[in-house]
Amino acid sequence: MSERAIRFGLIGFGAWGQHHASSIVKTDGAELVAIAARTETSRAAAKQIHPQAEVLSDYRKLLALEDVDCVDVVVPSHLHHEIGLAVLDAGKHLLLEKPMGISVAECNDLVQRATDKDRLLAVGHELRLSSLWGRVKELIDEGFVGEPQYVLVELSRNPYRLGSDGWRYDISRVGNWILEEPIHFFDLARWYLSNAGDPVSVYASANSRQPNHPELQDNFSAIVNFPGNRYAVVTQTLSAFEHHLTVKVTGTKGALWAAWSGAKDRTRHPTFALQTFDGEEVRTIEITKITGELFELEDQMAMLVQAIRAGKPLSCTAEDGRWSVAMCLAAQESVDTGAVAKIGA
Ligand SMILES: NC(=O)c1ccc[n+]([C@@H]2O[C@H](COP(=O)([O-])OP(=O)(O)OC[C@H]3O[C@@H](n4cnc5c(N)ncnc54)[C@H](OP(=O)(O)O)[C@@H]3O)[C@@H](O)[C@H]2O)c1
Image 1 (cartoon, helix red, strand yellow):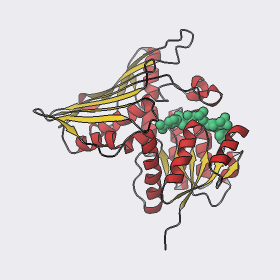
Image 2 (cartoon, protein in one colour):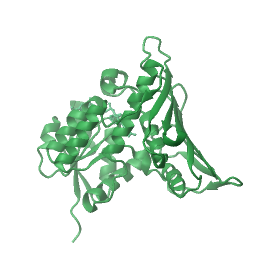
Image 3 (cartoon, rainbow, N blue to C red):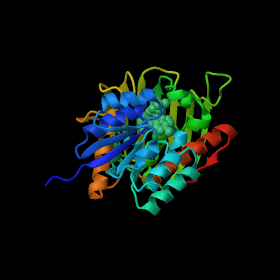
Image 4 (tube, helix red, strand yellow):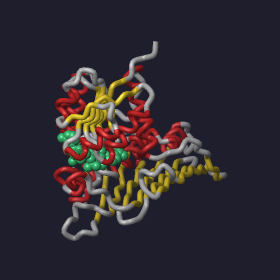
């Protein structure tokens, strides 16, 4: 007899929520049974694209559905804490988009509640599932570079989308802009340097093209210090074009250089490459599986189905999500004070 599908509810049907919905539908062993969306417009879109799903106006009604096993939360970041806790209180597993919360206290609440309710809490740092960024991690873990000493994660792209009601340009709802995109790169840096131990401190700078809105940082750069005098550079500009992400890792024995480019972040037709240097020879590593956030989103759903069904490990745990938030908040503190900030999760 075939195993019963994991039944997903989705809260939020905006730009990224729509991609979540399509990814759930495409995933073997997953079923999209309900969608909660705020406005009539987004509910109408949800009904049209996913007629099999029950479409609700209030997320609490979705949480009351007994046949929902797992709830996927893709709403503006200031709502992650409230809605995430409600999901766990309803006894459902939770896939929560990044940032896990907009303060460390919010993240702590979520970690504690997931433990108390014995539910899975996965955080949407999907880059960890990439065939490219994941291969970098494998090479580091295999010892290819020796001891990794330096990690650079660098993005140049076009400006952020406004988001529904302009929430992404409102600091009270977005938290800060480091929590928006650089958070993924802090997550990668900590993942790549995991053998060094937890990050200790950060120094960061940022500036804006809008003189009246210095908080909307078009350019942001941070140096994150890890134990053993290792460090990562996370840097991003939103004043550029298209979407170009680069990772460089150097260690005591070798170096890696990975790059991904697309006309947009959500392209299904990117170019990407990985080169290695062992101290003598530069080689190109073939990556056969296409990579990009839309593909990783699908892999994230498959990973979650396996975690719920078979107890397989999550690619990004609540603890990882909390560290990512902690690094971003410390970086913002450093931007504000001009001093090195301690990182504490
Ligand atoms: N992991 C990644 O790579 C990635 C990529 C993009 C975004 N994200 C994260 O995903 C989240 C959503 O981003 P987005 O780009 O999808 O934003 P968006 O396009 O503005 O969509 C947000 C959606 O949330 C809905 N919403 C707001 N309050 C709600 C409520 N109480 N109940 C149900 N729905 C509610 C909005 O409804 P209306 O449309 O009806 O107003 C909107 O559809 C953010 O936290 C963002 O940081 C992650």
